[in-house]
Length: 135
Image (cartoon, rainbow, N blue to C red; front, top):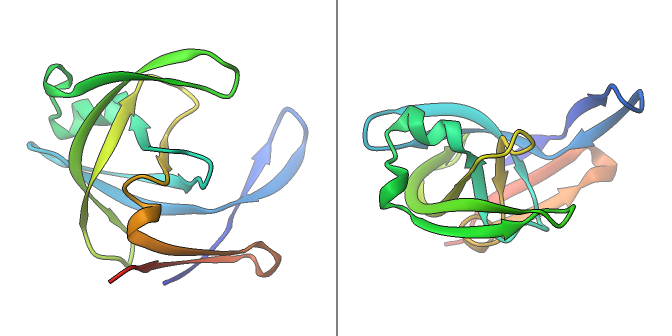
């Protein structure tokens, strides 16, 4: 499936930039939640904001607690669990995701769980990217 890059604005620099962002729905034991996620080829794991875990009924005490190091070198707790996600226009898949308490993370789709299940083709010069499930 082909998607268009989303144009964002950085108020700090006054610049516009394009990002590979998709609509995604995450599913938990008591509900589902729609949000957006950045396809991040530099991210090892798929991460979502910790507030979404509460929205869909994930008990963080039952998750595997680990930590990650951010770009600035700070360590943050991550709560790993398996959930179903569905990127708009694609089938629902079950993957491991981490929930993280970070204002800078809305949703990230990374290498483990997403890139290894899909063929990703970035065509930034055309303003598009493709996601095709690996059969």
